[in-house]
Length: 168
Ligand code: K1U
Ligand code: ZN
Image (cartoon, rainbow, N blue to C red; front, side, top):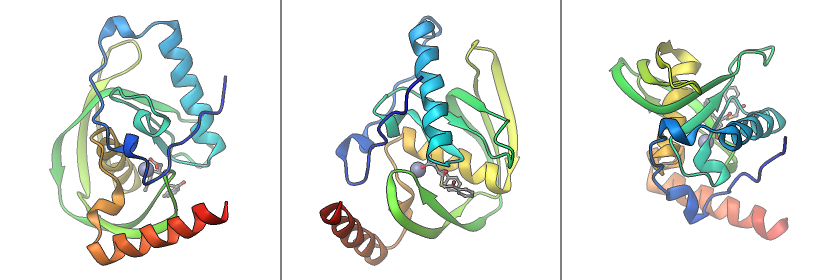
């Protein structure tokens, strides 16, 4: 297993739209990439990681929102088929260093996709899990949580990140 490099904003590769995964794509090498994504997500203390963030441009994300970090979830070809209500919670992103802000999201979502064995999966989520699903789906479409903020906030975050990147 390996820790993968997580692309950092404003890397243009974060804007790539991921392609669907075909059943035949899920071979030993693909499963090894998924294991690397889990290792990278746990190492970075993230609750989710989209393939886009590690420069793999297929529709796949890993997630684990459990306190004990023992409930790994991996969804291929995810789509949100139902949204309900509104929540406004603070988000961060492993690809946007030191930026946190509240984003408007649906309160409840129903997500459909397939697992690594290509078995259909449907999950109803609310709270953090619902936020995480929407955040990871956005990544697979080349969207970052900061895109949902005002232009002024985006410009402040860009300036802060430029300073951090000059420092490092
Ligand atoms: O995709 C990513 O960049 C990972 C990101 C996903 C996320 C989940 C929930 C809200 C916003 C973003 C993170 O893991 S952010 C860091 C984190 O560990 C965390 C966020 C919220 C609650 C608990 C932990
Ligand atoms: Zn993110």
